[in-house]
Amino acid sequence: MMVTCNGATARAEDLLPALTNYGHFTSLQVRRHAVQGLDLHLQRLAKATRELFGSTLDIAQVQAWMAQALQQAGQVDASMRVTVFSRRFDFRDPLASVPVDVLVAVSAPVVLTAPKRVRSVTGQRELPQIKHVGTFGLFAQRRAALAAGFDDALLVTADGQISEGTTWNLAVHDGEHLVWPQAPALRGTAEALLQAGWAGPQQIRPLRMDALAGMQAAFACNASGLWALDAIDGYALPGSQALAEQGRAVLAGVPWQPLS
Image (tube, rainbow, N blue to C red; front, side):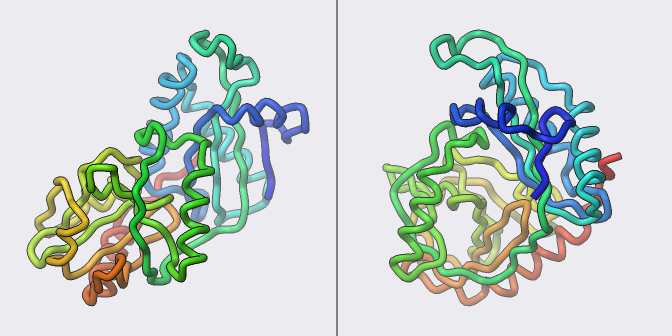
C-alpha cells in the first residue's frame, strides 16, 4: 500500500492527527485510471467535509492528488481510499472551522462477487449518512457474525427496520419490484448507480425483517462489487444469484470517469 498526504508521501507526523478518530472517507475501485461514479465519490467527500469541519473541500485538487497517487504507485488498476481529516482539529473546540488534510491510499484492486449468508443484528451506525472513520462497531458485528457461522451482519433499527449491511447496501426483490430499504443508512455510490440504471420497477420504502418471508432474492453492493445474498437469518433467497447477475450487468454499463 502507498499512502500520500496532500500530494506528498505521508510521514509519521502527518498520520498522528488521524489517531483522533475524527474524519471521513470514501473507498473506490480504479480501472485503467478511471472510476465509476467518480463525481459521486467527490460529492460525498465535499458534503461530509462541510458537515464535520465547516470547511470547503477543493475537489479538483483532491482528484489531482488521487491521479498523482495512482501514478506514483505505478498502478493502472487499484483499490483507493481517500480520507479527509484535519491536523488542526481540536476536540476541545469542535465548532472551529479548520482546514483539512487528505490521505490517499492505493493498494491492489478488489472485486467482490462471492455469495454470502448474513444474520440480522439490532444496531445502527453513528451519523449513518456520513462515511466516517468510526468503523469499530461495524467490524465487531462482522466478526461476531463470522464466529456464529455467517458471513456478515445486516443492521436493523431498534424499531425493526432494515437499514444496511456493515459496509454495504442491500436490495431485495419481491417478484415484481426491486426494493431498497428506506431506513437511515449510508447511501452508497454503487447503490446510486444501480438505481439510476435499473430497467425494471423499483421502490424505496420501509422494509421490516418479517417482510423477507415474501422476498425471492437479494443482493449486497458497494464500490468493490455486488454479490448475492443466499439467505438472511432463516429466510432462504433462491433467486439471488440471478438477481445479482442482473445487477452486475447494470454496473457493467456504467461509464468510467477518468481521474485525469
